[in-house]
Image (cartoon, rainbow, N blue to C red; front, top):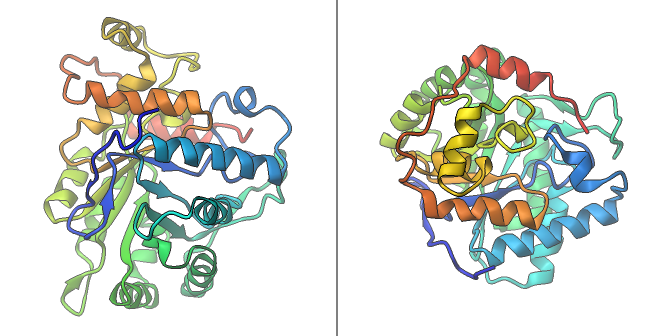
Length: 328
């Protein structure tokens, strides 16, 4: 691994510095997740101690590779705590990494791979006030970006005056405020959020959205958000493993394109996301150092995705298939 291999860049006009690839902790901070091949990667022994050690190994590898943005959430098991213990262990200077977290879901899996329910959603103002205290108690002022976790129009969170004014107060207190979006109507949520102002100031400064070769539908809305000065973070660029060699129904045209560039499909998928002119950060969800290094190697193909075959599904089809992925 080459230290400092990525130059830092601004996250929109937020004032935060990030790297073009970030490390997401969704698959590292808890025993179960929906990524394909997880059992092969991690096996069946996933104690808290083992999971923390693995998280530290991955955070070390990410930092040595030049990654300077780390993404976590209250619902990612003990990810915030694992991140905090890694920061204490590394003795990094303040500002060495930028950390974003999220509120809105709670981890309720009881550290069981076979838990009947792994997380619960609650976008109420009381939950916001509870979870901001929890995140700050763990991460302190390392946490610079605070996001609504999976905002939707149906949830009503973007119409909840108490939530919005509480977020505005957090922004006034120094946090950058963002939201993450999911589902077939991501674009509608982004555009609705971009119109929200509190006392004449746009509330949101960043968005994290799913964009990948199977569902690129949010691209236009993300370009609009970028034009407003928002920071744009891409999640699920590998579609939870459906854009890797493990996928059973990977299009032959995409395999052939990757082979023509003497690389793998996951590298092509990451490079395609990084090549979008509005993308500030593309998250890696790697759980092994081999996966991380493969993701990071996509930098060499940025801007070279000319002629990439279209494999896009309809948003409805994409999200229906995603919802059918099993926790493992």
